[in-house]
Length: 115
Length: 113
Image (cartoon, each protein chain N blue to C red):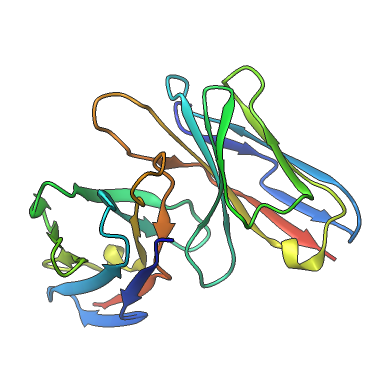
């Protein structure tokens, strides 16, 4: 499969628990983005990596959120002490920095439900 | 920061008619404007994009126009088909960013057979 993949696809957790999501980008893509999408809204940017460096964070990314991309390949997004307001679809996207392309390709998302 | 407004929020057309969705943006330095189609329960799919140095781009039944002076861009779908039914999102890359996208709130397009 040459597309962006995410795991798990669904996660149900109790308030206060920690959760971790994984994203595997398209193999030759060096840029990786995390977005959050709630029902009826467009995706909201959370953070961005170029290779292993985290270069940009949204103010939406509170202290409870942390993201890593240790070897410049897959990335993880961790949410600590989850709150009901964290319930959303977490989308990962990747792109290749080369020439003038900015095209981002999305994964299927991880749907988080906090009870 | 960048703000993207999208209209209408819902659009219903008869099969074969054209559909137009409009977006405005606030950051005059924005330089990349993609459109995504999202079917229920699926990932957003890039359908067409345009850069700030181009006024119009077409791909079969889909076209996008950009007016930099007015800071708005539009998606045009001709000869609509039932399989075009989905939520469409416009987005913009703010000037000075590394390519992160600011999305509009989406337009739910329904094409009636």
